[in-house]
Length: 277
Image (cartoon, rainbow, N blue to C red; front, side):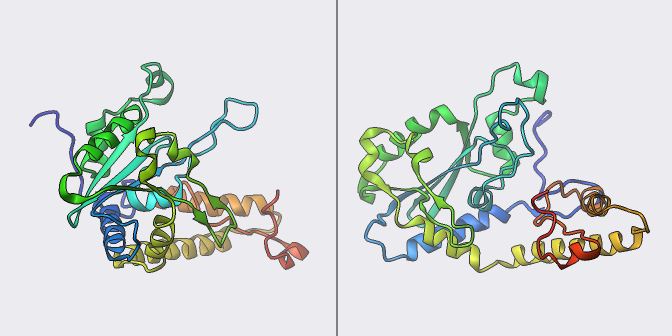
C-alpha cells in the first residue's frame, strides 16, 4: 500500500556497513523464553511476563547537554532499541512469546529540536515487535494480561534484579516497579530473570558470533590505519581521533566497545593510560 513503511530484512547504517539480521533480537527473545520454560523455578507459571526498563539519557550535570546515548545492555540484547526511555515486555504463554515496546509520548515541540516523531506502528515495524504502545499505557496492558489468565494459572511478572559480577553494579527493579499496578504486586518475581538472562548472553548464537567477528576485524583494521597515519610530532589525542574516525567514517560505529589506548613514550607502560583524561 502506498505510504507504508519499507520493512528491511536487516538493520544497517547504509553505505555498505554491516547488516544485522532483522530477527537478531527476536532470536534472543526466543532463547530467553526457552530458558524460562526450561527452568525449574516454582515461580514459573504458564503465564509469564518479562518486563524491562530501557536506558535513560539524563542531562549532564547542571546543563541541558545530552551525552550520546548508549542503550542498557540487557534491553538492547532483547529489543535492539537505539532510543532512550523505552519499556519492553515479553509475554510468554503456551510456548510462544509476544513482544511489546512502550515508547515515550513526546510533545509536538520535540520535532522542532530533535526531528520527526515516529508513531507506534513505525517503531513496531522498525524493531520487528508484535505491538507498540505508549509508556503511559503499560499499566493497563498488564491488567489486560492478568484478565486473560484463564486456565493458564497465575501471572508472574519477572523483573531484572541482580549483581553484575564484572562491573560490581547492582541491577535494581525499582524503576520497573513504578509501572506495575498495586493489585499485581504479588505477581512480581525478582529472583528468576537475572541469572537466566545473564546466562543467555554467555553462550553466543551464530548471528552474534558473526557480528563479534566483524567488529573485531574492523577494530583491528582501525589499529592498522592509526599506525599507517602516525607521523612524528603527532599527539596521543590525534591518534585516538584517527581510531574513532576510522570506525565511524567507514563502518558507521558511533560508539566503540573500548576506549583506544594511544600512549607514547613512558606512558606506554601504563596499562589503561588515558582513560581518566
